[in-house]
Every structure is written in C-alpha cells, then in structure tokens.
Length: 170
Image (cartoon, rainbow, N blue to C red; front, top):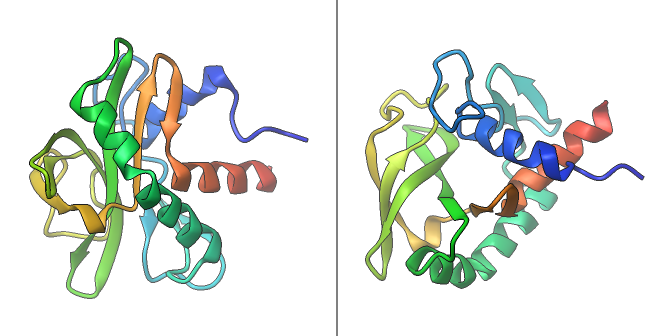
C-alpha cells in the first residue's frame, strides 16, 4: 500500500500548496497546486490551479471537522512554537458573490476570537481578494490548519485527502 506522501516530499508539497519554492520564497511561476474550489460537480476535477471538490463531499467535510476539533492544538503551538515549528497557516473559504474558493492564510495573529493574516494563495475564481492581502478569519470559519515541524507537516487534514486522491489516480 502506498503512503500519501513521503517525509522528503512533504515539505515540497507544503511549499507547493503555499505557492513557494524550496527556499520558501514565493515564485510567480509556481502557482498553488491544491485549493478546494466550491461549486464543483460530484466528481473531483483538476481545473488549472484549483482542485474542484463537491461542497457535500463527505471525506472533505470529515477532514474539516477534524481540523476544527483539533484547532486548540494548533492555537497552542501558534502561541508558543517550539524550535523548528514554522509556517503556521489556516484554510478557509473566501467568497466573491456566489463563488467560493478555499485558500490558505499565513503570517497569523490570534486575538482570542479570530485570526488576522495574509492570503497565501493567488485566487483563481474569486476576484475580490489578492495574494498578500490582509484578511480576518473567525475561528468557526477555519477549515484546516497546518504548520511544519522541521520537514514534517502537522495538521493538513484536507491536504491529506487531496494528496491521497491524487496518489490513487496515478
């Protein structure tokens, strides 16, 4: 049985998700590979830089529920990260009218009720947000969270679903 991602590839995938290169710097020629775009049909289809997933996808909804259930673990690490814990980010949906796009927010600050940070993805379908824009996210709107412990990704429940599906298609 194939694992969803090897330890060495984990950092590379995390950087690809955040649209950065191996150095951690944002590069224009490396678009985000994994965004969950709302409004997809029942079948997951890759559309450019966005992975379309049905809004009622039970596996993705379960991954989001797990991320919300464990959010306090993330908050504790964000408040006092041990050495090597970096890249803290959360994922939420951003809307432009009826169109929703699920994207990552990094450079986080937590005020006890909501996060403030910068949008880490270049929107594909949502035109009223820009990469690097300062955004605010309520705790209840968090759909996933992730940080790096050295080269190991911690959290990333929705990412794990997408990577496993990608591996199953190969």
